[in-house]
Image 1 (cartoon, helix red, strand yellow):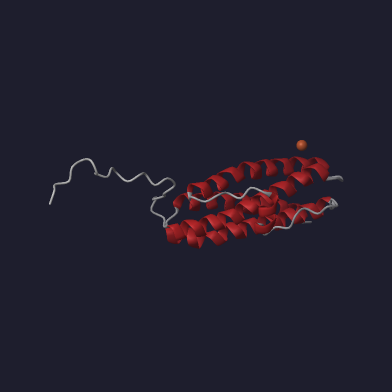
Image 2: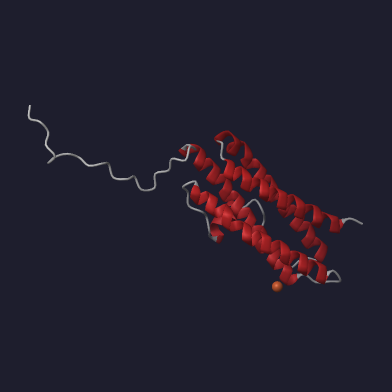
Length: 174
Ligand SMILES: [Fe+2]
């Protein structure tokens, strides 16, 4: 048998573009990315509602709420990027359209007719609580997969949403 020469020798296999080997299996990455997509949709929807209320709030609490809503929508706007980029790091596309957000979000769209000031506050309390539930619901998957960066991100988001819900809720108390 003829000895193999270099002529027909195969080179190293082409590098598999897009192949991900970070120690979290494909199935787990998919499930976590799916959960984070819901969190992204919730966060974006709450961002838009909060900005809407910043524009449309009226009444004697105008200054307080206009300013408070600005701080909150700015924080939410800054939060969507790390959530989306974590989805990308797990190898999945990040949803980024109103149609996708409408389908994925657990929050309703902002009302077309601007509500009274305290009704806005109530809607935002419910919104922050809903986002917290979505974030909390992803934890079992993340724990099981040993996905610490996502756990860290979820912990940060939970802290923000639970604190915002408390502050807003306090405005509704006598
Ligand atoms: Fe403004």
